[in-house]
Length: 495
Ligand code: FRU
Image 1 (cartoon, rainbow, N blue to C red):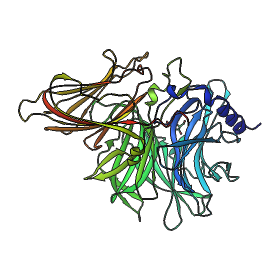
Image 2: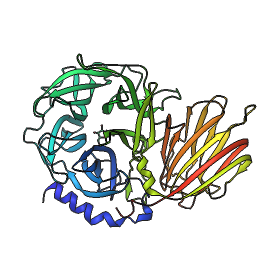
Image 3: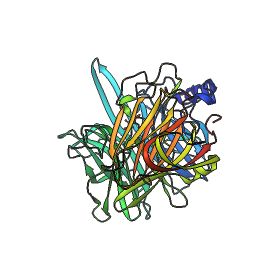
Image 4: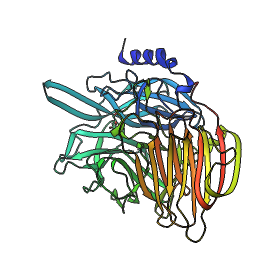
C-alpha cells in the first residue's frame, strides 16, 4: 500500500469517530487529527477546492504532513474529498504548503514545497526545501517527474535552502507562470519574498525580491500571497516571532499585509507600513483566490502557531479554518467581511434596539452558533466605555471593551475555560468617536469579530468553552444598541 492509500484509508476509517456536536457548526475542521495552513485554494471545474496541511494520526503537527482536500459549490457547504498528497517521493519527508491553478491544458496544477529532513549524524538535522508540481483532475494528483522544479540551482546564493517554501502560483495573461516564495537571507537570517517565473512550469528562474524583512517584523516569513485588488497590489506574509508592543500589530506569529504598487516592467513592489491582518489570538497562513465573479476571498488557519501544541487532552481533532472572507481595499486599507454566501446558513432572525442602563441582556439576542451584528452609539458627552460579553454562562465568557474616547478595544479571553496558560488579552485601536459596529461570527469553538465594516478583525479559538455558554450581555450607561442576530444552520457536522 502506498503512503497516500494508507492515508486515505485512515481518514475514511476514522472520520465517524467525531460526532457532529464535537465539531464546529460552520467552520472547516479535519476529519481526525491535525490541520494547519490552507493550501491550493482555487476554482476548478465548477467547484471551489481547498486543500490543507493535514496529519490525521495525532492532533499535533508532524513533519510528515500531507495535503487534505475539500470541495464546495458555494464556499459554505463543503464536501470532504480523499486526501490529495502524501510525502511519498525520495525528495520529500513532508508535503508542505502551496497553491493551485487551472493549467492551460485543463488540468489542476498544484505547486507545493517538498520538505526534506534527515538526521544522518545524531543531533545534526539536514533540511532542504524545494518546490514541486503535482497535476490532477480535482481528485487524484500525480507528482511531476521533473520535480523538484525549483531547487538550489535556481535559488539566489544569499538565500538558505533550509527555509525556502510556500509557493503562491498564478498564471499571467500572456501565459507566463509566476510564483512568490518565502526564503531566509543567509546574512541577516531574516525572511524575504522572492518572485520566480517560468514559461512552461517546469523550468523556473529568479526574477526579483518583492519584499525583505527589515528586522522589525520577526524572523523568517512564511506563506506569502500576491494579488491585485481595487487598483492596488497586496503582498502578505506570515511573520514568525514578531516582538513589539504596538497595538496595530500583534506580537508572536502575525500576518502582515502590505498595500502598495507593483511595477510590471521592473518587477519591483513599493509599499508603506504593513497592516496587521487579524489582531485577535488565532490567525495565520492565509491564502486567497479569485472567484469566477471577481471577488478576492481569503481563508486562514484559525490558530496561533505558538499554541499549536495545546490541543486539549480529550480532543480527536485540532485546527480550523476561518470562515471565508471577502477582501477590499479602500484608502490604502484592507477590509474583510464574511462572504455573502453566509446568508444560505441564516435561520431565524431576531432584532433588538435598546438604550442600555447598566448590564443588559436583550430579548432573543443569545446563542452560540450565530451571525450577530451590533451597532453601538454612545452619548456625545462623557461616554463611558462600552462592554460586551458573549459565549457567557456567568462564569465563562469572552469580553470586549471599547473606549469611545481613545478607540482602544480590548479582547479578553481569560475566562474561556482553557487548561493551558496562553496570551489572554489583545489590545488594539479602532476608530474612536460615537459609533462602533461589530459583526461577530460565533461557533462552538471560535469567534471572528469584524470591527467597523471589517477595518479590523479579531479572531480566536475556545476549544474548552462549555457548549451551553450562550448568553450575550452588554454593559454601558446610555449607549444605544441595535442588534441583529441570525441563528446559523449547521453544515459541518455531517461533512
Ligand atoms: C506555516 C508553515 C509553512 C509550512 C507549513 C508546514 O504554518 O510553517 O511555512 O509550509 O506550515 O506544515
